[in-house]
Amino acid sequence: MPARPQLFANNRAWAAKMKAQDPQFFIKLTRQQHPRYLWIGCSDSRVPANEIVGLMPGELFVHRNVANVVVHTDLNCLSVLQYAIDVLKVDRIIVCGHYGCGGVAAALRDESLGLIDNWLLHIRDVARKHQGQLAALPSEVARVDRLVELNVIEQAVNVCDTTIVKNAWASGRDLAVMGWVYSLHDGLLRDLSFSVHRADEVAAAYRAAISATQVNGRHGA
Ligand code: CO
Image (cartoon, rainbow, N blue to C red; front, side, top):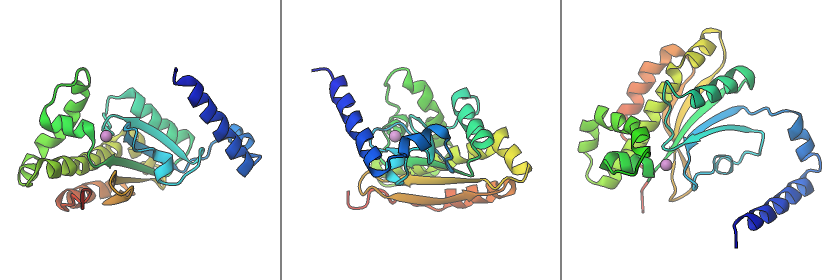
């Protein structure tokens, strides 16, 4: 049995449910989207962005890739950022990783998974940068989860460093860049205390977030 018929049936049921809740729902959405937030997260199927923050279609602009990486030469990610900030006028950018991230774990273990290895080199760079802090942790699980946090902070800084965000701040825009982590174990988000509203806050926020050792995603797991 191909997967498609079930997905189409699911879709019809979902559309009917949304329409029952609000008969104008789809009509309103076709007019315009007004998301306040841009979410940059991992592609992991267990981290559905809209659902975990309880936002409806139209409320969250989303970019996802393996291990939520923001690369300065990634035209895809940069285009999402530019469109979100300049056209949609989002004022909150959330970089959200998740504990137990397979991409981060593969990078840390130097596993070979194919083409993706090249993408994960960005995470290996983060691991190398914070080698001392990671080596001091007692287990591989703790190292993966700390690297998840460090990666979020580094990628959030990469967002801050883009000309798109810098220009927005220079023009006086109220724009915040935040770093969060999601836990698969309890479905809860953790704030990594990286929340930047101005260009001159980035360096201090980075130092504070990096020095605050958290690794709090695996409690009881
Ligand atoms: Co992941």
